[in-house]
Length: 537
Image 1 (cartoon, one colour):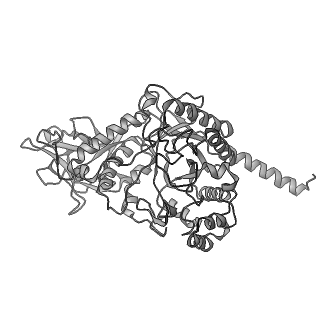
Image 2 (image 1 turned 90 degrees about the vertical axis):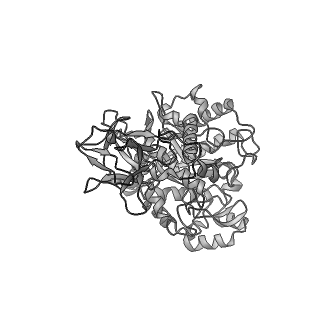
Image 3 (image 1 turned 45 degrees about the vertical axis):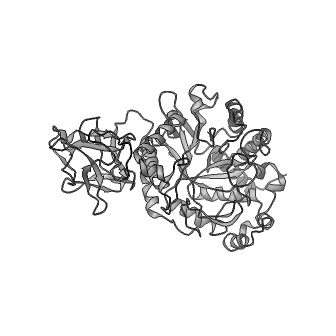
């Protein structure tokens, strides 16, 4: 085949561009951090989940709004990446992957969804479902968003129950060799797409077959398969028991030659605790939840042999109707921001085309409303600000200070004009220094935080010698800050939200006079929860 001079120039340009894409924006790991290989600087994944693994096999919401609009909303709400799901059969079986969007919706009898796609994204109707998956990823990239493509399930469907045939290697719909072929194909498909920075190799392993021996065998094979095809991207490894258990790594490390590409993931919901339990003893339930997470997966970010941890699913009913979710979220956010972990919220979805037999199903945990027009709860979106930003970097030489975070509101403590302290946005929060049972000092100032009398406004003072300036981190979840007043009684910081943003000091909720947790407590102590979050950026 002969080329004209102009055609040859274009061909060379395309090849150079392709080579550049294949080598752009590679991420690696350095201890517990994800870094940009080119700069050595930390990159934090602050993602939202977007489902494309259910029976229709294409991205939810495309029947409600144009693709460009949905992606613009993801970016506008502060996320920098998307955990974008796919089912194995869509990739490995032609009878699934060759279906056009129109055929897929017709097969499921989803006439209204098809009409919605025809209105909002008509270009996709005659494209097959794999082509649409790639088109969504490309649109994310055009908007500067990263993608983590996630093998969510084998047979397209809602996930997950233990006996659905998709839970563990060897189940009816989970042939390990077919799964590996799927990983290989997707790794190849996105090999030269810089938007895809990571592949999550299987969601929520579960069921009667699950065992550690097979977990090590197949997860190591899956990681090696992806890295052989696409060594540029990160490989995300999930645990057992619905991705809640990685504790077995303490006794047997993950054997891999690609350590600088491995990220472990976990899911952290409030499953197993009721609203009644939270309401009876919020401090105790939170403390137990935090300890369980530490034992199961948070340990991975500690010590000299640490790995990045990606909390790839968590979330709450954003309507506020679920009190267990409401209380869990403050507890969860305190750990998320204090540990500065990578994450992906479930999810962007306002609704689903077809989920568990229900057509046009509403999603209370979704960021967007039912019609995918706007966030259903802007205060929740704002509450995630400190979780989205990089608070710690990979350079241990940078000096550490703290911001004082109030997880119930997502705001941080600022020093006011009259030396009082108030809650406001975390972007310009005051920085503090603190040692246990000592003063909380304002960085760059001789002033420190002092307790007021019951109900009075806490403030900063030049007098940092008395008991009123010696702060204890109290309660079992370590979320109360307490100091003694002139009479020797402990008072805790409390958000005075009923009146203004001023922080006052009051009797410590759900704590005895000696700061021990009370056995039961019908009060909600979360107005008094403050977390000293380490910052070195």
